[in-house]
Length: 530
Image (tube, rainbow, N blue to C red; front, side, top):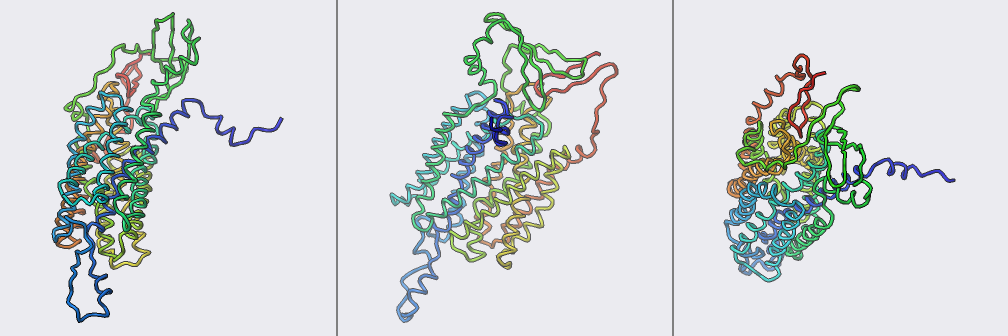
């Protein structure tokens, strides 16, 4: 008999639950990648909506300078963005999308907590694909009405709010607190991967037909919506019905043991089933000779209210911190290609390709922030250190036009890591931690609402940042970077209380004499007498 190949042995070492967990990780990664892929085209197309054709005019009239100039530098621009206030108009489009996104996010988490995630997310992705395509169809059907583009941006901003609370809730259901920072740091790289793919796809058609820069990403996210409907598994418990059908003998009287990881704890479940009736006990082994037995409540916990989520310790501080951190990140998302075009004197396609390096740095920064916070057990401190280092980096980045290509690439990578690191950590691991906080006493129906509050507050900053950039850039790009450094400093200040608490808190909490304290995120606090 031939030996089993090592690759097959490796694959066989994983059980069914681990395969489902890996599948959910990969699927939610791809789903939210398509969300960011569909948001990126507007930043690439901006330099095409308002083009400076003076250089082309000079070449065309080089041999006939005696003729009067019949062209202006806005001849190549797309109406209504051909006016002198084009930066304000482009900023207004960003603001309309992000403002709708911020307002919708607060409602999205509450709605998503009460609806099937798979159906809710599928609807949002299909509608987002529709509105993204509509923006591109404005180019094909020669639409020059500003109200049309504003309407499409507002509608797209609203439907895209279905994405983040849904995927974070789903990934939080499948993965516990063990190494949550690392796992979600890797998973959150979908943001940067989506930005990179969106830049490359939009950049491919931006010069020839910028309408396709929107239509293709719109078709991609719509197709991923269909994939979501067909394959997304919201919670591990949803697989029980499939398992029961495949194993009908489980309905008979027997004692079954199964291991399931839940929020970082391995729990031993004993179920005694008699016919159609069952009595469930949640049991965890604590010591070789001791075990905790907790009767599982039969009633489904109610979804947490908006005010109840705000009362969770740390939610307000991290939400306000994310407001300023996301202001910086989204200003880069929407304005970086145009800034590179103006500062480095590159065309739209090359500027879009170069801007992807910022997102590559964001991938590394998000993973690094997760690893460090897991190792130290201090989320706020990790964010604060990265915010502190980001301020001087932003100042250096403002002088990009004075650098060569090599230093510019290095600055894009470093700046991307320091800017997106705290943003990624707060929106993923921190949101999941707070959504399963011990003050909730085991109520798992808070994750979507907490995630929506944190990201919704951050989206307010995401709406303000690009709008301010559009106004300040008319006075010079230095003014934009001063605004970004001020936002970075304010984000750092809002974390100081939590940082102080982390640094001064005791690492070990001693249990009460004669008892053992067990803090399970999904159950109330319990005291067990030996």
